[in-house]
Length: 486
Ligand code: AHR
View 1 (cartoon, rainbow, N blue to C red):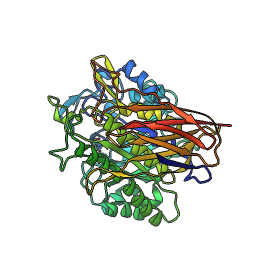
View 2 (view 1 turned 30 degrees about the vertical axis):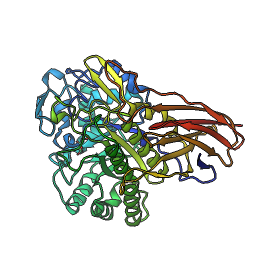
View 3 (view 1 turned 120 degrees about the vertical axis):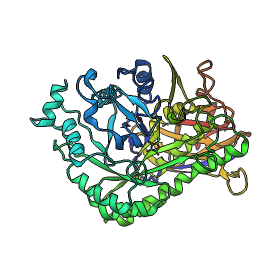
View 4 (view 1 turned 60 degrees about the vertical axis):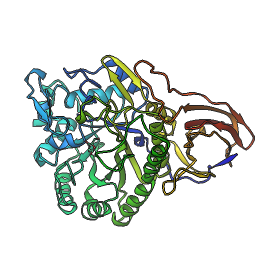
């Protein structure tokens, strides 16, 4: 029996709902053939499936694509929009049918905030500044008038703006010092056009453990930004040429993947410490605006499209990362898994008109009630598993309390072969009723278009006691316990 402890007397704060954010790039079949058709029209089954996730914020148009994107190419009558080559992702020609209006319409249908990444690598300050004016200016102005001409009277009200993407790499191969200066310059011209809507400015952040980057940006540009980003992908293989298969892996690779994904905690803690130290008292947040698994593409698919399957191993990766973000909600203000549809660790995979939900989708749904809830300190008394040097804890958890007193406890059992009986002690929380759901399967279990429901949440038997609850967590599973208080 393993003990889980939830301490309602201690909290890191409110879990920012934006931790449950998503990312959608012009890459492979994320936009065209995923979210939209080739004419830029939203595809209803995809939008309906995404709606159920209650996505709080959606990042667009990249990624690397953002620093090649000129937003004015994607507005106005679709038949008159110019074509472009997506030089980062497969060299395909795009017709720009999906642009600012189409993306912001998607956000309105999903009921989520938009997070637009501006072009710093190959754009201009004027171009970026115009985009903000186009989206947010209510009165008369050249850009607001252009927006009206294109059929949108009221402003879109976009709050989140990324000042470039991966400026150390595809976003311009810059040095941190150079980028920090550019960030100051760009930030100056991203104006507030509405006194109730200040642009929330997110600086292009570090790759993995590049602490020099975070320090330099925060030290030199911290006074003009609200947050700095961090990108960390979980890649099981030894290098970019051998990342590993999404579904064909052995026990050792399973534990290697989980070990690597657990590194997110160290990264979040170290970058947060640097932000705190150099922010000179300003509340600068950490936005993990790209994270998730990155495998070799599915055999026979375009290598530039980053299409991969998604298994129970991915479900555990999602659970572990979301637990980490919940437990560090004092600094993690946003996270955007890469990506929403058909790319990397996707929520949805599509084939023609067919749409399937991945195990990762189900984890996001099961964790949904953490959004905006008060994080509660929690602790799993657990043993370590896996191979020498790459050990992982058997159990990984987080907990939160909603405004009405309902407590959500989410626990992943990383043990691929053994179930674990747990006794969760809830401290000051007196449970009246506990219900639970579980997502379970072999590590490589996944959904296909022929069998879309191989991995779906099921009810987990749970026994409520005066002090908490007991249950048995199946091997390789993610469980969500909902505790109603007396
Ligand atoms: O998500 C895929 C790519 O990964 C993004 O375009 C880029 O920012 C990162 O390197």
